[in-house]
Length: 209
Image: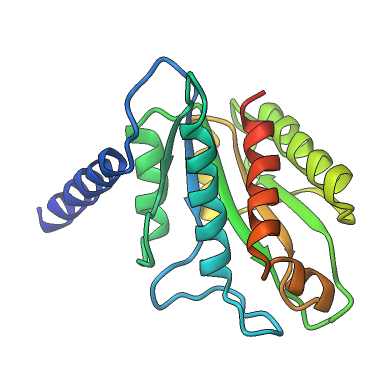
């Protein structure tokens, strides 16, 4: 019973946050953007001490701002709106409750090899109703980023990540690794607010196609 109440409270809290950010329910495409990590889970830490959780939060907020500028904005929700730790299961439950048309999880990469670089996109290894569409969406996003920014392409790959595994039967879902924080060039690129806005614009433009 306590677990049920916790889940209900989580959804109510997020929907209230959506209202605070001025989002309204529309007939437009409904997208859940999963903002990776948060709270005590910093995610990857870059060579310049930037944290993955902060970078993906900045990108997500920039996407929301771009969406507000549209005459007919998309119906976009985030899995977190501030520096809080949300469980993976709660992230996927939100997408299901909202009946999302697309689930996009934002992350940055890290490697012990300082020369590792580029963008890679993951789709679920699990074969389900939206597998092909997920690969197509992932390919479109990666192609857009690589062409516009000059990122190396690491391709669309398959993995058993929980957020993908638990959403692939309900909607297309992809996980984006937006460059390596362990790479000097990409770490510095992701430290720039103007570059964050550029990434947000390119991702948003692809989602709005």
